[in-house]
Image (cartoon, rainbow, N blue to C red):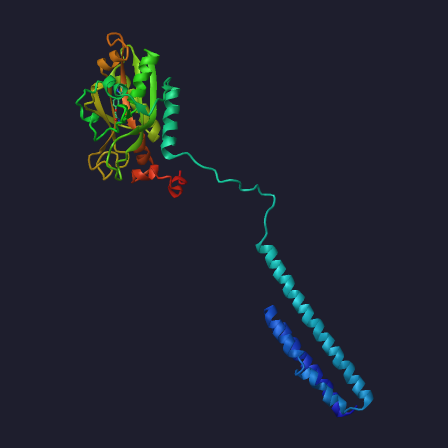
Length: 346
Ligand code: 2NL
């Protein structure tokens, strides 16, 4: 066999081997395509064989020509195979990363949640309902009589000042507490009675981090025969232990409210430090929480209840303040903001 044809065949086989190495070495489809364009281009060594083949005798030329075609076809096949492998890999990767479990339930609309003040109110309503109290509501626009006079609040009491009360032009007002609901309760139900009156109240105040013109409270009252301060303390301790989910220690200090006699400020031992003093209780060990007392006889009489036969206790609890304590909320304005970043935390 002449030297020339053997060396041509060797060169062809070498060229093929080099291209196959580069096919194997390609790490991306783009790499591979670049290799293919180069290796099979018109100027590529493989396509430069024509000239050299022309110098061979016809039967040898046919042999080398067959080999050349076989090499080209073999390389085309190798390119296709490698390309198909890339496509399989890409598909496998997508199937892996985009896999969706179609048997999972659809997410549906995001559920809402109760406002923290509403949650406090619902808990307190549940507790008092379980102890035989009715839950009463009433108008937010009230008469001066139901908001003030019937509560033994004299005409010149500072609570009636323009400062504190939103007066309407017709002489009515936005209730400053839910006491008028209790007045209406006494008028309607008569003794004996147990009721609470949760609701929204309004004060004409400068708004800051701890004061708002609109806030929530719960007032409550029990009227029966021979109701004592002991009954008052029992119900208040039950209320506070329920809200704070542990036994609380309380103390009573005298407090003045025209609608109770005697009147008290009920404090609880600080739940943060337990007594020694901390920033929450302002180093006193106690937190003022619950004004309360025995219902003033004039108040009973004005609502048609004979104070010689009946008496009762009453209390007023700031729901807004309680929610702030429970959830460590440091700005009262958040509660009325409607800001979902705030509300969705509850
Ligand atoms: C407050 C007020 C208190 C009452 C509210 C009351 C209502 C009637 C009769 C007697 Cl109809 N008392 N309510 C009693 C004691 C204290 O608190 O502003 N609390 C945050």
